[in-house]
Amino acid sequence: MAVYKRSSSLPSHGDIRPSPVACRATPQKWTILEGTSDLSKPHQIILNGRCFKDEFSMEYEQKLKDVRELLKSQKLENQIESLILVDAIQRLGVDYHFQEEIKAILRRHYIEATTSFDGYTLHDLSLFFRLLREHGFSIPADIFNKFKGKDGVFEGKLKHDIRGLMELYEAAQLVTDGEDILDEAAKFSSQIVGNRLKHPYHKSIARFTAKKYIRDFQGINGWGKTLKELAEMNISMAQTANHQELAQISKWWTDLGLAQEFKQARNQPLKWYTWSMASLSDPSMSEQRLELTKSITFIYIIDDIFDLYGTPEELTVFTRAVHMWDYAAVHMLPKSWKMCYKALLDTTNDIGNKIYKEHGYNPIDSLKSTWASLCDAFLVEAKWFASGHLPTSNEYLENGKVSSGVHVVLVHLFFLLGINRKTGGAVQVDDISELVSSVAAILRLWDDFGSAKDEQQDGNDGSYIECYVKENPGSTIEIARERVIDMISREWKHLNKECFRLNQNSSISSFSKASLNLARMVPLMYSYDDNQQLPVLEEFINSTLFDKTFLVHRP
Image (cartoon, rainbow, N blue to C red; front, side, top):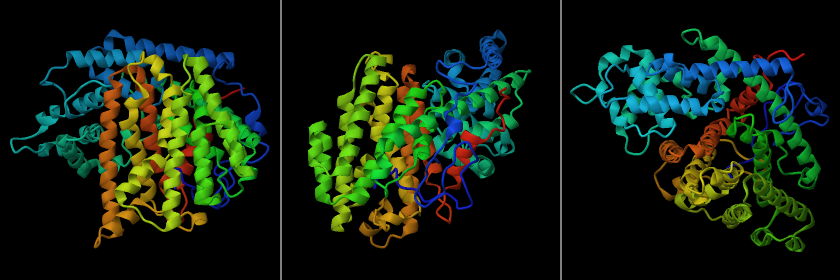
């Protein structure tokens, strides 16, 4: 039912990656093998209070200093080179080190730019637009009118400017509702460079594309080498941190004992952790990734309880217990469900307490509310499908956005990142509701767009496409799928608008970036091939966690 659905099995040709962590390619399961001792051992490059080897640490700090000095260099002022440098830093995934310097460069460009943008080429203006809009600066889309002819369309001579068209296509991905000129720009540029940009930067996970960018990146005026070396070291550090975190999640999950109690349920700690790893790319956010993964775990497990273990009557009781949020309510539940209910309360209460210690307030009421809403939505779907009732497509989608679990994830993340404290209360959790809705719709629609069937649910899970075809006689699956594609495109426009609005307060940029990363991760999670496998997700996990192409030597 939830967007976080049980995936098809991984390819049968073997493990998703080599040791030290293995994932069994068994039907409906992504598990970490027993005996992951390699991951449990201390590494020599460690984050968050644990020491690196001195030589590596000193080299890393020096490269950070070199890049920071370069960003502050007078030589970069008012030159397009500074924008190229900022873009490279972001694409290489090391931008979280230099947020203040990046903001200063962009603010300078914003102040000094004129309305005519004389001297800006198509490439330069497109890059200017994309970077400043990403960071919350108000840049109107009509600045691209300078590249239109008297007939109101983009000039034909631009078709020879491949570099400029590629950047124009990238800029057009930040379109919001009503910006027809950006829709025109995307269409115009894609006719020439579309095949080169199947995965535009704005809709891609930077860490997934960073390695290719490292290989292709040259830089200008000599700073490329330092930046590439810093990025390679950063990848090494991130992998070490992720391995350690994955070992902790595996142990936590094993200790819970829920896999033994619910043998039909998903047992996929690697997949659950992948959501958090992709959303929170900053290596320093280890604690937030761990706590977020725990919440994501319960979305999957409770979804499976509703799908596989309970009658509507039993599920009603479980939902009532979640609303009560009281350990005394366990007596209402079947034996195995008691363990899950207690673990949910323990984990969520613990997250609330950790947020209190870190940020000075306990958001447990908001966290409890997300779980109650999730169970309400699961229960609605359970009753629909138990009765054979197929709702209207709008009813299905509105409920499906809640049952996606996105609200649970992003509300937990909002508080884990301490947004209330960072903004001085200027941004409240209610202020992210539109953003949550768009990410949830993207997840739900992408999930339903896929052709994979859930074997254990006998395909009885419903979908937006199924509901739409039934309520629109004469419509076909193909027509419904085209509609879903258009809806996903519109939701991205809404998401862009909300992220732009929120990014005007720089203190919330980490949350906006994580939310975008969640949406960017969706196609990877639901791009099934003809064999109902997930090759793109497999590639992402191998590349991000286990490919040692750029790992520095660790003695």
